[in-house]
Length: 275
Image (cartoon, rainbow, N blue to C red; front, side, top):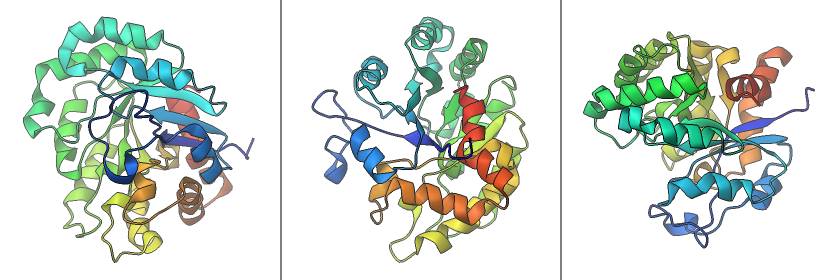
């Protein structure tokens, strides 16, 4: 089974079908499974992560309607800050085919949002469903996320994109300290994903991304780390990068053994999402 490769973080969208208010520039066009697979031919399974359409409830059904053979599961949006009121929404999502996780985008929220009692209640409701949580934050929110998750230790969580670290400007030590504090929570895993948009224009991908990826892998261990391309967002900026190229680069640069490569390439994602 060593040929398995699960891309743990793929987006697709079609603005002719669903409305996406945030799309602009070259992202504002359909990005669909056939194009992804052409650029990542070695991928045997994908986790589709919600892409923020205006009509969020329609996204899971739309993704499933595409007949995507490699689709293993969908990480759907849910408004977790609604607390116990989100329970029925979570139940509907869990019953909606291949929902394998939930994401409530946190990266643009103020730090006070992480202390919202409704959000904690929603995360506890999510934990009771058995579905895990994708935490998409920026690096300055790491300690707030850690404090929040300490209150819901039963919830499996994966950190998207290494918390978008300050790759272009460099780390003064804060990101690594805060990342290791989060990694000390045993229920948290990490996606080795989302780095290209954080690079400066003059930075070379491998040499710039590798130190950050190495810290994350050291902090979490291969059994709590998974590769993800973040296609198509990370394929655009600051330079064009095929998703398959990112996946193979991470595995080639970081995996110190066949066993580690197996964890990073599919085993961690398979276990985390139950696919």
